[in-house]
Amino acid sequence: MFYIDPVYLIFALPGLILSLIASAMTKSTFAKYSEIGSSTGLTGAEAAERMLHRNGIYDVRIEQVGGFLSDHYDPTAKTLRLSPDVYGSQSLSAIGVACHEAGHALQHASGYGALGLRSALVPLTNFCSPISYIVLLIGFLMASQQMILFGCILFSAAVLFSIVTLPVEWNASARAKTMMVSCGIVSADEGDDAGQVLNAAFMTYVAAAVSSLLTLLYYLYRAGVFGGSNRD
Image (cartoon, rainbow, N blue to C red; front, side, top):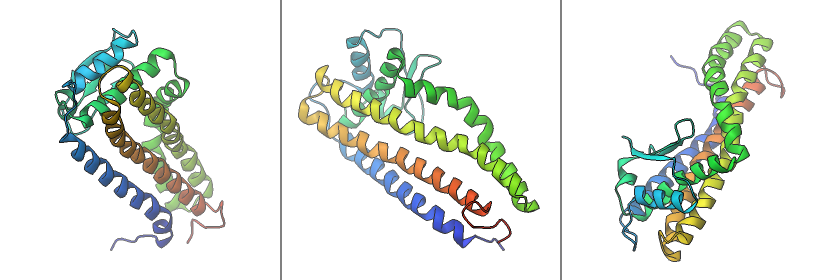
């Protein structure tokens, strides 16, 4: 039989509930404004291109990739990759998401500090995160507080990454909300509607940060930092 630590549920449930709510909000808001086209008739790719060009950026490629809401900006390749639902769609949802990703390209071009920090944390997080689970498991099996604390230190890289991500995503959305209107991509009213999609999407990053932080606190509790015990 599988054993689920009731204390873990106390730490995990708030983050899980927030994640489910944020995911549902993002999908429903994206679906709602996917049915509403922009008055300019621009596609997501065209909107992103206009936003980049109006800001003097011509060396960023825009290409289509598979997947639902798999949109992202790759600073190492200077490439903005848009999902099929965004790349060729004229909806307000598509334009909002595309301009948000273009906002990351603007951050990169302007040397936005938080983006540089997040990029620097990627290799560290990719290395530490999977190893942390192994170290933690060994620590719990051996009832070793030192091993669990070491696992917590490794896991902290993922927590830091999720926290640093928040200002990066918020700033990219703020740039998109302002520039999609000032660049003539959408009207002011349409910009407000497209912004709703970005607000909902931001909550998924908040949920991820909360979940990772609560998970770290649980591990620390089991290590005895807050009075818990790895022998419980």
